[in-house]
Length: 223
Image (cartoon, rainbow, N blue to C red):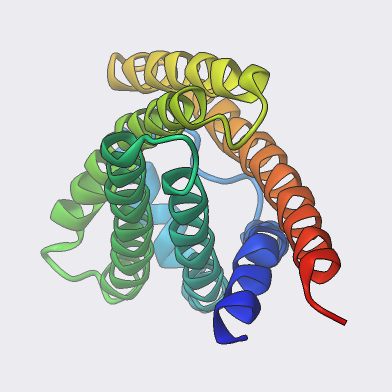
């Protein structure tokens, strides 16, 4: 019973994550800093909006907990297919890494806002750290997409087309990360939109799978 409850929570946790993600970005004052290599602009932005950054961090941190639940649930389902334990473990590890980086980015943003508002000497270092974490997180997200795509094709748990779609998302995400690295910062927004669309797609498939398994379980149960 507890396993079924966990599976149901895990299969819909993506929706809570996306809702909190959208709410978190809605809180941030616009326009946001587009160029992650512009440390002076980053310091000015975060220093001027310390209170809203705190609200963003709270919403984002809570959302990341739901994302971690979904990552674990998805990896568990992929491991239960025809047989792709290595790929599912890679998906779990890279997905957990993505969440860890998200927590690190949020923590750096919060520290950056406090340091910039107080004109602390180390604020510039935090600004550079924030930029580095954002780009590294994009590369890791690309690895996660690829790992999930490989696990889907090996396990057959989800439709084959979503496995190939995940591969395409991986290539696009890594391309975006490279472009951001060389200074084309504005494409970073595409990374956010790509993540939202991919998670929504994976989440819908996961929810449908859980409902189907639950129905099969109830039919197979003795009267």
